[in-house]
Length: 99
Image (cartoon, rainbow, N blue to C red; front, side, top):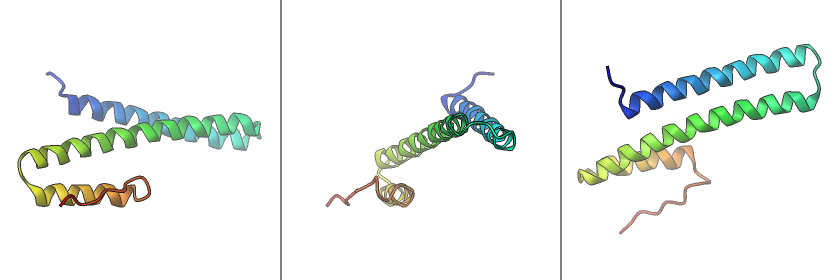
């Protein structure tokens, strides 16, 4: 069976989420073992990086869906999808409606 790009992205996201979960489990163990703050912070950063990559991947997929809706002339669906993006990223998105 051939994997589509979407299937591959999903598998990569699942891998990243499992990696983040492993880092978080490790962080708990490190705190319980009274490990150094710097070591703990490095593990927190690794978990945050994994989560950020999943977020970027999902946003990328969402934007592709939005572009497809625009290409199909579905302006209502495009506006709905863009509204979802601005809801999730209000400070990063300063999208203005094109007149």
